[in-house]
Image (tube, rainbow, N blue to C red; front, side):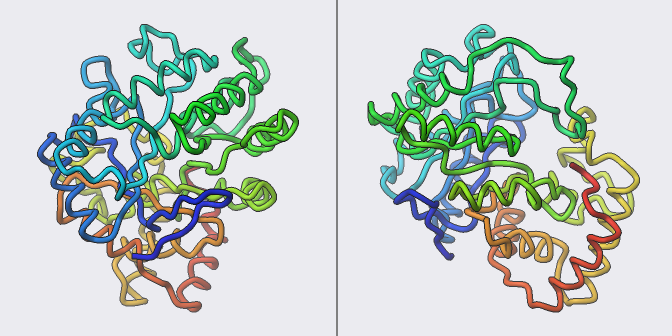
Length: 346
């Protein structure tokens, strides 16, 4: 397993990161511990979670995912072997988190850090991320900014100050952003430089063969602000695993269980694009998983690709796929297909 250094940090993370959002809903605590053991044995040292997990989120299960990681850390005594990333929920996202107190004030950030550390059974967090911007931005699948949806809330300056305070306190080592826009990335850095405090070092956004929003202005922002992408949904919520090909609805699969999830993926153009990439993988002697994860791994701005699984067999396949190096001919064919399907699931 290759390690990559996150820019501007001393964090050396595996190029495959273990995602955890099914733990506590589709996966039990024992499942979670088994996945952690397998991942570490395979060379993964990077674990990503969030205070609002598992998904689909609700008040009854919220926090279980962090708690499962915490019991594993307490049992295995391997805190120094792993880099742990978690996230503070964005504003108004889930009313059951802190009874709806999700405005990203410095005080809320401090409270959320303490709560996550308690569940994780650790006294520091390596990478702490803002799960959703504290302002009006298009939601999942949204493609147009609407100024009429502006809402009041803590400014980016207060969020930067809140994160800087946690770094000074030794509770977090670095911080990052998630589901952020180019303007947001640049504004966080502008204010951090103005204040003389650390800026964000990572951006965790959706990125896959089907979701290409990072490739243009966001990629430039990553380059100019010395940041790395943490790519979530590199298999497009499992669609690029091939298990849904031909209209299949596998028992226990996410889109089979939860009709409300992944609206942006449930479009005819998405299915057409998946079929095209599946045909390309077959022509190149690859599985669709290898093609999809190998492509994400090839991106120059990638820090790590976040993979998740509900079974150990899926996890083994994803770990292997995340380490595939695609040859130039395959990458050229992918780019040709991109001309037909530039961004089917933004």
